Image 1 (spheres, rainbow, N blue to C red):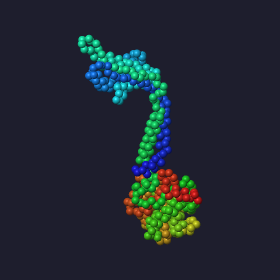
Image 2: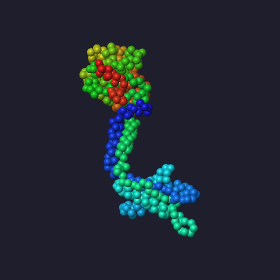
Image 3: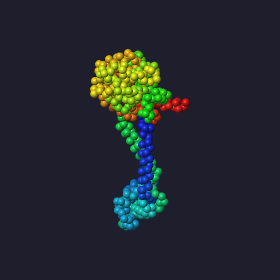
Image 4: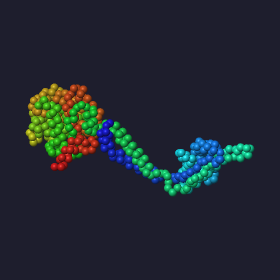
Length: 461
């Protein structure tokens, strides 16, 4: 995934990312609101050696203190220090539980020892911190660091002395929860989860959204893209009804690209199909036929979808008799072909009655002969054929024509479906003119850039 793909995913999933980030903030704020405030009180103890007139003893005492002060950090939270504190203050706890709220540290490059106590009560935190410093002093001086004097006097002395230089006072504000930190962590966590889900969905989403996916799976050229328009279902004949609209211009662009792809042939026949139903192959056939007829090309549009025909309904013509009747010899072609439109260049053949064996009819010798005849009489012969994956009609018919034009619906067609459809054509050596992207988002990360520019130009007129 390159940077462009990364940005596209962010733009496509930004709402979910923002919502999850906001959710993280909300959960963090709620957690901070319902967390019991904790207050921290600290006391500082200065550790020194006992005064000595002997320089050697003074040096040894100082070195001894430096070596031993780190041990006092562990002793401060030991049961031997905490038991007297619990007894003195009448605390309803155990040394192990109390140790969880006690921390001690030796200040770097000093002989200071800081003891901190965290408690829900600021007063209790201060009392416990002072009591621990007193208990630690008693334990260290009275037990751990004593020695018996020389000369038979039997007097015990301590090598070190612990002096409280800063007693703990009642804290005025809680140290936790820290609302800014909570909110920062919540926002970052929500953002990470949002991004993770966005890219996970992207990895699992096999829908074709635009040009990049088509180019990644096929060498077939993209002949053009038609932007999505919610009104297209009610008014499918865009080139006829709204000739200046961006959608109409897109069909004229496809017409031009087709001319460049097959510039050596003045007459041709081709199939317009798709991978699955509902991708807009019939409306593409209709609008492309109208666009070609407007360019002074003599065009015949044949509804070869003998299963679910739509051409007659969209054009408002009689469709009871048509292609199927010609193929079984019930009617002559000249009897079923109907002129349509203002240009005088477009002729339409409906599907006729629905036969029980569509695949056999479209692949018959009669169909082959009909195509040969039509390519002599018309400049463009367009077959609106069924989708490639459900049935074989379009694949069979594409072998008899110049090739196939595959319509792909953005945000509906999936990569495996288009891949399989193109493979079906390749397996029988059928030519593929190219792919038409239909229902492309007019704006956003999946937009086809041409349409945005065209719409902008139209709006500014």
